[in-house]
Image 1 (cartoon, rainbow, N blue to C red):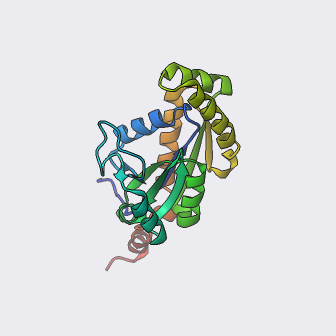
Image 2 (cartoon, rainbow, N blue to C red; image 1 turned 45 degrees about the vertical axis):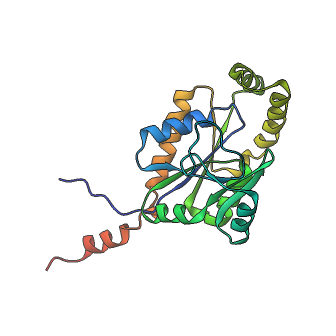
Image 3 (tube, rainbow, N blue to C red; image 1 turned 90 degrees about the vertical axis):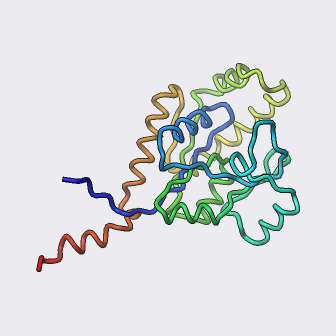
Length: 213
């Protein structure tokens, strides 16, 4: 018998963590392993970096344009981070949701909170913790990409971010990246199967319970 696939509504899947806790690694693996999951492309006021592509990595806009988008309620969430603004445009995300496609967000706790306030039950929030602050600092130093001043700032920010762990639906400890990745996959799959997302279920039940002929 052929597998029955019901129409469903997509998931807004949020991953948050302090810098260095492994969120970006897990996000990349999720996107590479799941064709139905697409990254939310944010608008930002920060300058484009070498190798980045407008519309693929970010939608690069100037401050005036960004402010206009905020005034016109074009973002599901937006934030001011490290002297630049970032926001998630609503229109393409709404279209993907309605089409049963899932959208991945790499945002902080403020963005997650805003997104939940705007989109409610469409949102699934996962927070990833490091095994310890000592381990987190060690990971940041091993990157060898940040100055001492930046590392100190990231560690201070990490402590503040961890304090918001209770604003998430799931909290995972990344002491083993393979295991943490598998747990994130299980969460996404379970959330896709929630009855509330199965928009095709009512029609199927009606056909199932209607007498033939």
